[in-house]
Length: 176
Ligand SMILES: Cc1cc2nc3c(=O)[nH]c(=O)nc-3n(C[C@H](O)[C@H](O)[C@H](O)COP(=O)(O)O)c2cc1C
Image (spheres, rainbow, N blue to C red):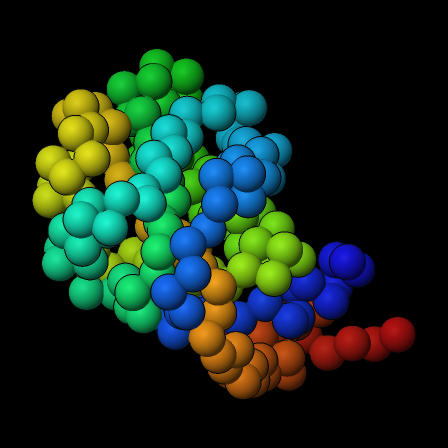
C-alpha cells in the first residue's frame, strides 16, 4: 500500500466485530513496532500483547478510553530504568514517551494495510494496567493500541492545514 494512502486512510476504530486477531497478524504488528525510530536508538519499549478475553475485560475496566470491545490490545510500555541509564533525565521523561508514540504509529499503519482496525489509547490507569499485566515497577505502560477487525470505519475528522502550518517563522507566509 502507498504510504500516503495508509497515512490518510487510517482511522481510529472504536467498533470491532467479535472475530479474533491471529498470532501471525499480531507478530507482524510487533515487527512494525520494533522498526520504529527511538531516541539514541535506545529501544527501551516493552510490548505486552493481550488476547485473553478475561484479561481484556479487566483491561477495559481500568481504561475508560479503550472502546468497542476489541479482541486484542498491544500495551506499549517503557523500561524507565533503562531509559534513564541510556538517556538520563531526558531519556526517562521525554524520549521514552516519544518512542512509544513512534512505535504506536507504526502499528496503526501496518494494521491498516492488513485490513485491521486500531485505536491508540492514552486514557487508562497505569498502575492498574501494570498490575493486570504483572509489570515490574520500573516498566511503565504508556499507550494501549486496541486491535481488531473493524465493524465500521469512521469518517475522517478534518485537518485544518492552513491553521497548522507556517513557513520559516510562526505566522510567516509562503513567499515562493
Ligand atoms: C496520544 C493519543 C491518545 C489517544 N487516546 C485515546 C483514547 O484514550 N481513547 C480513544 O478512543 N481515542 C484516543 N486517541 C485517538 C484520537 O481521538 C484520534 O486519533 C483523533 O480523534 C483523530 O482521529 P483519527 O485517528 O481517526 O484520525 C488518542 C490519540 C492519541 C494520538
